[in-house]
Amino acid sequence: MRTVRRLALPLALLLALGTIASACTRNAAAAESAKYVNEARSQRGTAPLRLDLTLVNKAQAWAEVMAARGSAGHSVLADGAGDDWRILGENVGQAGSVAEMHNLFMNSAPHRSNIVNRAYNRIGTGVAEVNGRYFVVQVFAG
View 1 (tube, rainbow, N blue to C red):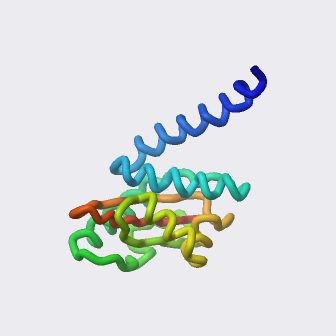
View 2 (cartoon, one colour):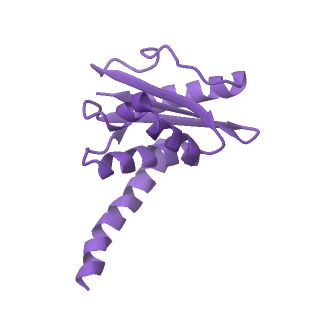
């Protein structure tokens, strides 16, 4: 019974975060990307990032630009990020799934550094899919 109770709270929190994430992102794939980021942070003892609607809008718009171009590339980072930040970061890429893209990010030191950076407290994620390719954008702010 104790094991069930110990697992119940973390599971309830994950479900709540998933519900909140999907309500604040533009699509389920973007919510999945944010979930992977916060799981990676949690595994390293780093506080989760709060979804920020301004950053979500920036990330989604840029994911759609990348998808239309058919290639990944960085945005002008401050454009569309609002003015409530002192530090910004961005991960961009394309892969066959959001999970694959997350693994690629985590296997790249600069991208992983953005994901686990303690200076960040907010995130916006965007994902656009074209012909089975997922264009993923993660914008970090602190």
